[in-house]
Amino acid sequence: MNREYLTIAFPKGKLFKLSRDLFEKIGFTAEGLEEKSRKLVISNEEKKIRFIIVKTSDVPTYVEYGAADLGVIGKDVLLESAKNVYELLDLGFGKCRLMMAVPNSQRREKFSDYANTRVATKFPHIAEKFFNSRGMQMEYIKLNGSIELAPIVGLSESIVDIVETGTTLRENDLVEIETILHATARLIANRVSFQLKFDRIKPMTDALRKILEEEKA
Ligand code: PRP
Image (cartoon, rainbow, N blue to C red):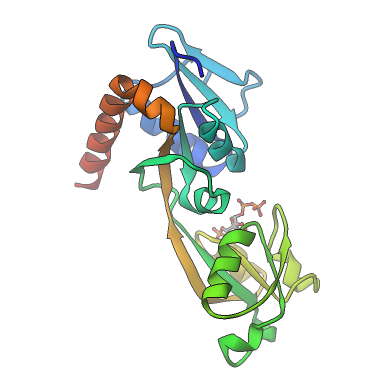
């Protein structure tokens, strides 16, 4: 852990710009902080802040090990990672749902009729917990993207995936069967950093909370 700097991990993808714009409002920014930056560590020397831009699913890992003091990550990815970090703040943006869906043509009568079939997902741990809670054993197929494709080409019977607008489901003639969880972006902190850098993290979190409340009002 670098004691001098506060290191913040931003995820690539949909949450990057929203994260950058929010932190900018409290003066936490750095020159050249762009998603596609070839430079991987972007520093603000004056404020002693460093930003790192990492693959979404890696954010909890950087934070758990203290390579980043703080990070922004979706609640869905955070739960799936099962990492030991503090969740400091619900940032409100990046709203989505994790749900189970199937091709319209292969809809079954009862939920329990899906027992013992294959589920394609980026979230096998959350999916397993969900189906276990229904007393259903399933086969989980871990994929890394374009999950909706799996049941269309016969790789699985169903999917557990993120829905935002519902466009991807509609365009692929999939129907939602059950919602598993609602998610938004969270600010997370490394447990040791939170103690050691409390004097910096506390006012920063308060300032973010204030902005979020003002925006809500
Ligand atoms: C996510 C998710 C769905 C899609 C949902 O994929 O996995 O495919 O967005 O959004 P919608 O309801 O607005 O259509 P993402 O674009 O992150 O890419 P991926 O398929 O590579 O995971």
